[in-house]
Length: 273
Length: 226
Image (cartoon, rainbow over all chains, first blue to last red):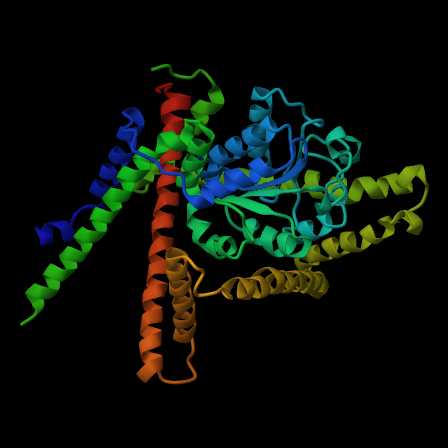
C-alpha cells in the first residue's frame, strides 16, 4: 500500500483535486461559515465612517487575484456606496487598472452612482512607494488625469480632496507588492489614517502583526475572508459559493500530507534493522 | 446549460483549457497560450506606461508650458508662488532617456546615473517607511501588559510574549545554543513552525482559490451553468 502510494502518478492527485473543487460548485453543500473578529473589524470600521465622506481605495492587484479580491472589492464598494460615501480608486499594479475599472463600474451601475461625482478611478501609475509619497503632496499631483483621461482637478468628486488628510479611511485591497504593507509603511505610519485591508491568502500572514499592533483595523484574508465579509453584509457572492470547494480541497490536502508522512514512516520502519 | 455567444469569453475559456492541459503533460496548446500571454503582456505594459505615466505626468504639462499655458493659464515653466516647477520635469525625462544608453556600448555607462537616482530614492523611501511603519510601531505594539484583568486575553498576551522572545533568541547566533539559550531557541522553533504552518495553509487557500475562480468562470460565464 505504502509502495503504491509512493509511486502514484501525480495526475491522479490533480484529477481528484479537480473533482473535489468542481462538484461542490455544481452541488453546493452549504457548509457553515463564522465571521471572525478581524473581518468584523473590517466591516465595523467602514460602518463607522461618516456618511457622505470620501474614502481612498487602492486596488492593487491583477487578474491572478480575481477569485479572492474581486468579491471583497465588490462588497466593500457596496457598503461604501450604501453610506453615500464617495470613493477614490487607484491601482499600483500595471495588470489591474482595466479589471478594477470594470469592477468599480459594475457596482456603481448597480447602486446608481455616477462617474466623477460619486466615484473616480484614477487608474494606474508606475512608481510604487514613490506614488504614495507624491500623493501626500496632493492626490492630483500624482494623478493629473483619471483612468478615462478626464482632468482630475475638474471632477466634482475631487472637490475638497487635497491629500491624505481629506480621507477618513483607507481601504487597501492588495495582492502583494506594492500593496497593503507599503500603504501601512508610507501612509498609515506618516499620516495616521485608519486603514483596513483585504489581501490574498498567500500574503495574509504577513499582515497579522499590523492587525495586532492596531495599524490595521480589520483584515480580510483570501477567499475565506471575502466569504465571511459577504456573510457579515448578508450577501451571497462568488466567495461564499466557492467556500465549499475550498473546504473540500483543504481536507484533501491535509489527507495527502498525512498519507505522505505515513509512507515515509513506513519506509523508515522497513529499512530499520 | 446556456453556452455564451460572447467571443471574448470563448477566447478566455479556450486559453484557460490550453493552460490546464499542462496538468496532463507539456503540449503545443500550453506552449501557444504561454507565449501568447508573454507577448500580449509585454505590449500591454509598454502602452499602459506610455499613456498613464509619460503622457499625463510629463508630456502634457511640458507641452502646455511650451505652449504658454502654465498653471492658471500662466505662460512659462516655473511659477514658484503657485508651487509649479514644471521645468524640473525635464530632469526625470532626461534620466529616463539616459537608461536607453545601455543600447549604445560606449556611452552605456551613462545609464548608471539614472540607476543611482532610482536606487537612492527607493532606498531612502523604503528605509523611512520601514522605520516608521514596521520597526517603531511593531516594537510599540509588542509592549503589552501580561495581565489584562481577563484570563483569556492575559494568556494570549503571555503566549505572544514568550513566542516573540524565544523566536528572537533562535536567531541569536553569537553563542552556542546550549543550556537555557538552547531550551529557549528550541521553543522558538515551535513558534516558527506554527507560523510556517499557517503560511502554508494560507498558500494552499490562495492556490485553490485560483482553481475555483477558473472553474467558476468556465461553468458560469462560458457554459452558463449555475
